[in-house]
Amino acid sequence: MRSTFFIIGLLLASSLEAASCPYTAGTTARKAAAHHCDDLEPKARVASCRLGQELFSSKELSFDRKASCASCHLPQKDYGDAQARPELRGLGLSLSRTIRLSDVARRVAPYFWNGRAQSLEGAVFWPLYQKREMGADPETLTKFGGGTKVALALSDYLSTLNSADAAWDRYLAGDCQAMSPKAIEGAKIFHASHCENCHLGAEFSGDQVVSYHYENLPQDFFINEESRYGQDWELHTGSIKTDVTLKVKAPSLRNLYAPFGQFGQGSDLFQYLESHEKQVFTPENKSLSDTERSAIVHYLSEGLRSHPESKKTEDHL
Ligand code: HEC
Ligand code: HEC
Image (cartoon, rainbow, N blue to C red; front, side, top):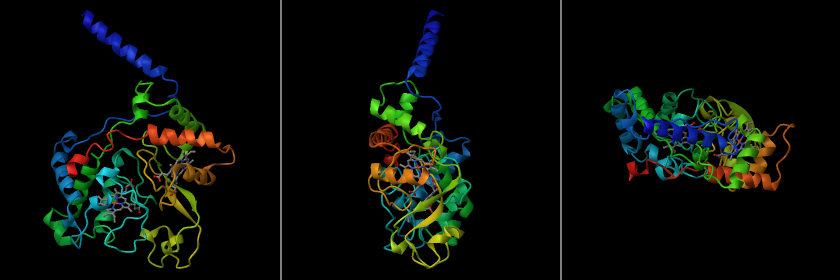
């Protein structure tokens, strides 16, 4: 009995400690998530997830047997590729930067830079059928049970690609030493600058698209073809411009890698933020000083990076 009280006392003490970290107001803690197929419920999803895991790195799904999802979504880069544009099959791809898939199921819809998919299962159909990515043919899909089964299997697997907790998560859970004073200062400035208007919740990503202005894009982004999935018209009118305004979903700020932005237009986080502020700050925002911006860089790169980098790298080795 006494030991029960002791344990309750300890629990109370640790939750009091959590409340005593200097800066946690108005923030959202992450919920626990699956890291392996075996963690999924109901059990039918376990088998589906295992099929998805196999298909994710299988080149058999692609029309030319030369690519898999993992060719662009690299496990060691949090399932992104850290390139401005994916290099696949040597094609001149007019695609944007690959979106990191770690924590994708923890993020809220819509999916893709231009928010064209309203569910994760729906999102998977795009790379599955698009020739730029997999271009899977009907016979191959039938071999694995059909397009719907394959898309569900892949999305079940994607729902296990969750990163380990970052320093910020440990800080929110009461480990006040988890982040340096500069990173904590960065968290405060992040909050005070209303970055969370677009980078919401525990994953710091958007729940809708916003208008975003891009300057000095390379000419080969402007190609005269069917617009990218019925959106982003401005890129496909055939007239070469340097500036466009597109509808864009704010990406997650966890586990950032250079280059930054939809088109990989920023190579340095500090400089990227300087130009980003000009696009997203409203007249009420006061512009950030170099010291404030540098504190935000600390928060993002030190506080929101998971260790180990990816919990699931070993699956693909
Ligand atoms: C040619 C490289 C490439 C291949 C191969 C590829 N992807 Fe992607 N993936 C991308 C790019 C680029 C984006 C961003 C595209 C956009 O927003 O229009 C993306 C975005 C996504 C997204 C949206 C993530 C989000 O948070 O919005 C999902 C889901 C996804 N890919 C899953 C897959 C799956 C599953 C496969 C295999 C069937 C796959 N991808 C194959 C490059 C690739
Ligand atoms: C009005 C909505 C909005 C606000 C407010 C906003 N962002 Fe963003 N953020 C976006 C969008 C949209 C993008 C994608 C832009 C691009 O393609 O360059 C983005 C991209 C980013 C990126 C690049 C991520 C990557 O993966 O390349 C960083 C870093 C970032 N924002 C940080 C911040 C910070 C810090 C603040 C507050 C000072 C902030 N954002 C405020 C909408 C917003």
